[in-house]
Length: 220
Image 1 (tube, rainbow, N blue to C red):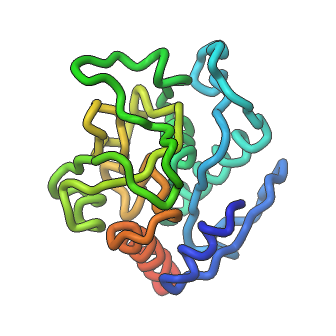
Image 2 (tube, helix red, strand yellow):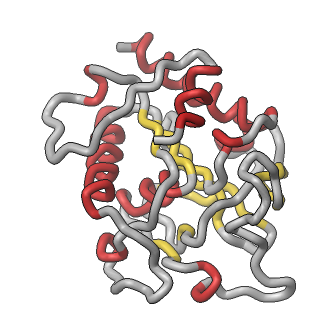
């Protein structure tokens, strides 16, 4: 786990609790944490959404895939706030029944100027492309804008959104950059890496997540 995630949570008043990938978790998540943050990482095993591996598929970790799907399922059942970042957003979509592009450069249908640079060559703490956000969405309420600049470090992306999820942000080429629950208190996924940025909207994103976790704690 990259330290940037822990620092981002701690900076806005949260206490990060790291969970190792274990085969079973019988006790409720809410017995030791008030929210679930899913980080970036490697590729997802396409078997989870009924596809065979694409030639450009990167390294997969089946144990991690299973563990994160278990965590998402439990967090949803218990009504905990969930924030997914990059792979974490993809994990939310897969856990709830959606699918992914296994490799954007070879699978995503583009027109006009083509794909933006989704796996940027610039340092991770620099923004490289714009994301447009749906008005009145949870993400719009959190970042307080309909357009922000983000960084980008991925070659996979959400293809078909899962039932119960809606798309609330896209990059200029149409790639999905934000998803959220239709009726959830706080279920949000973003495709970029706010933990690496010092922008105001990145701070607001983590602050909103921790506030939602604190609200869950206060209502317990």
